[in-house]
Amino acid sequence: MEQKLGNDHHSCRHRLRRVFGRRRSGDAGTIILESQPCPVDAVGNVYIADTGNNVIRKIDAATGIIRTIAGTHSYPTAGPNGDGGAATAARIAPTYISADAAGNVYFVDQGSSIRQVNASGNINTVVTATTAGGTLAGLATDASGNPYIANSGANIVQKLSSPGAVLITLAGTGTAGYSGDGGLAANAQLNRPLAVALDEAGNVYIEDNAAIRRVDFKRTTARARLQAGLHAVSQ
Image (cartoon, rainbow, N blue to C red; front, top):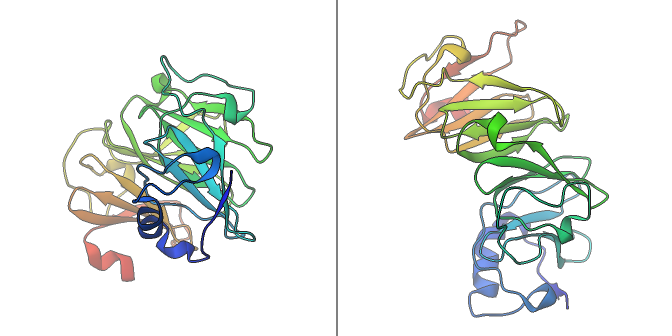
């Protein structure tokens, strides 16, 4: 069974809690128990990491219909499984999630790996727990579909230029701290970054402990720099 939701996707988190908080059902009779902030793709589809049900769900922008696009409602007993097959047949434990303009969905699975559900509905692991080397938190994708990862456990922010490629450290030295404003982002210290976001110009914003920091790519050189404090968001 599918359920139709309203069109106000900007209040996704609030709306889902209100609609499902009284045990109203969604697709397949399930209930959204918990969700991280919901990304929206280029055509307005909304994606939900339904952590309580171990699935990822999609609200279609045109119809308002919600359906499950990944997961079986069962928690995985081992590492990532189901690679190469239908995402709806894989056991997952999704937390943070992002979507690109091509309809690919990236999510953190079990807090340690990055997986992709492609536009055809198949799932693959693009960053393993061994490669990531830390507890993963927020995700974002740029205009080219490259995922950016807030690696909270390693105190860095990373970029994946394409699935299967080597992770690039964008910001942070790996040592917890707070330093480096105005200098190269790779030489700065971060302290368990929790979230990452991008603007239309390609600048990267990092939730770093109690501050919002920006990696500025507006310069003609490729020397990414950090600016600190909430004021950086409006600059």
